[in-house]
Amino acid sequence: MTDTQAAELLADLARRITASLDLRETLRVVAEAVVDHLGFGAAAVSLVQPDGMCEVAAAAGPDELGQALLGSRAPLE
Image (cartoon, rainbow, N blue to C red; front, side, top):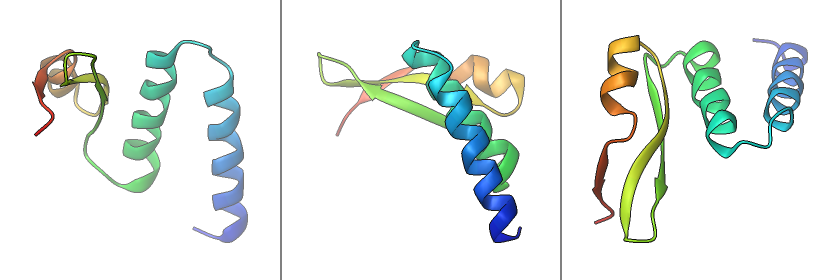
């Protein structure tokens, strides 16, 4: 990937991120970009909840993996 392509990709991602005020939609866009452009097979983004648990808020990759991960919770530690 050239520097120009990388800059265009980042600009496109920035536009997509700022297009929504919904946090989970924004996190989904980021997870999809990781899979689509960085060569990972899957990506997940977790948020720390007030009770100290981490909850998967967005996932990208194979549909069955995303469905299995989305909403799953685990202790922060």
